[in-house]
Length: 181
Image (tube, rainbow, N blue to C red):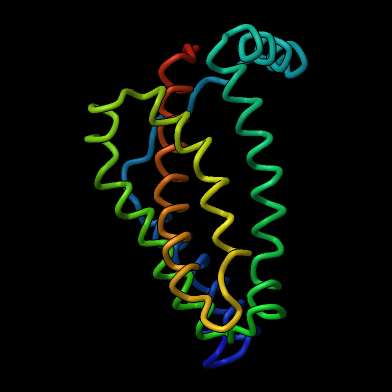
């Protein structure tokens, strides 16, 4: 869309899609009963939550791992399009379809996830993708300047596949070990 109509139109289309989604959500019938207001003790609840998270070994480890991973992956993804444009000289349309193809790794992982977890267990399905995915990201600077797309596609598909496995399963584990109040 950026290539066809310009960045402003693409941003406007994105905003309109959110407005449309919001309008559709408001048409959902049969709302839930409103809960009784409870006295809030935000500071105490925050302290309780932090004490639980850092006292529970799985949650403590996941919190540290995911925090570090999010810091570095956010920095990487903030610079990725700049690198694609300035260093690899990719156009907007190429970046668009490249992103679409790379994101198919998420779809593949969604279909394979339950089989992988059954085969290897949830712990290894979180840990190994977390360890291997940064190595896969090395495909980005390793891509040859003359024809980077095959390397970017391969590395991108592997990266999104591994990222899905790590993220969905760490969220599942968090939910499984966190008590509901």
